[in-house]
Length: 295
Image (cartoon, rainbow, N blue to C red; front, side, top):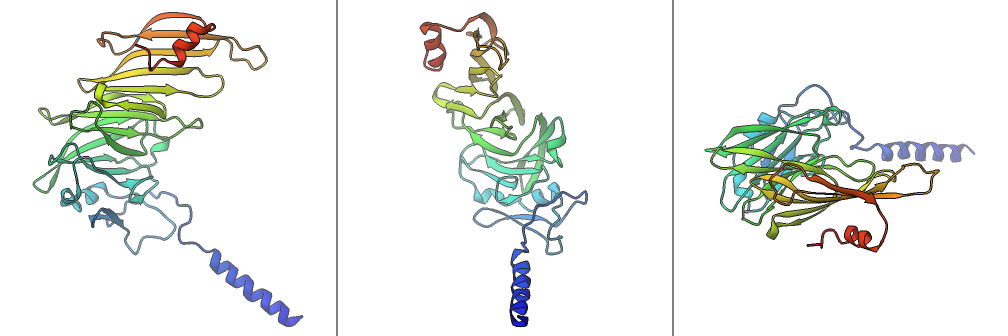
């Protein structure tokens, strides 16, 4: 019996050691770590200072990261964008900070897109800073605000060979998120906030400078289909159709409406209401189902 007890104790101790993980859930700390570095070795890499506490993530010093990456241009091809730091990317940091590096065109300048906010989940809006690399120095260009951001990606919205920046936000319970788009004005050396939509279902059609967006939320929310065009570095709404419950009440027999709006001349910042009627009949069903294919 004594030998059996000793064996059990030994196994229990071994079990405790095996369960101790080096990557536990981490909490942000208000102290900034200056020595977290990013360097290029085939791709962007972040190395933590050995003295950094094992289970305590701290926000990084953005200026230090930028200064340590003045040679990053050696890594880029025409359409690449590295999310170096953030919830997704080479180094996963959950303090709300995001850093990405990119070229907008072949052999063009290298830019840094930075969200310096700490714990951006709790802010109403977060700031994005834009920098251009020039003579191994990062030159601040301008800033803009978005609802929230998880990562950045580059997309050529109008097939002109010059990429725009897309900011992708946090997904909600229905899988939808904010998508902001930024275009660069070379004459003004400035990134313009071209607008946004809230959905995770969309289709880029760069040959037509067009984006088709489908929004589906909770059971009581309307299903909205929207067509946008990227024009003069702005997201311009073209057409929109909405189908929803007349009375969002689970105890009532469902009855639906359809609402249609348009901006055919692309000369306004929003679509103009055209009609709203009861949603029934083959004609209206076909119109909604084939909205993106309709002429």
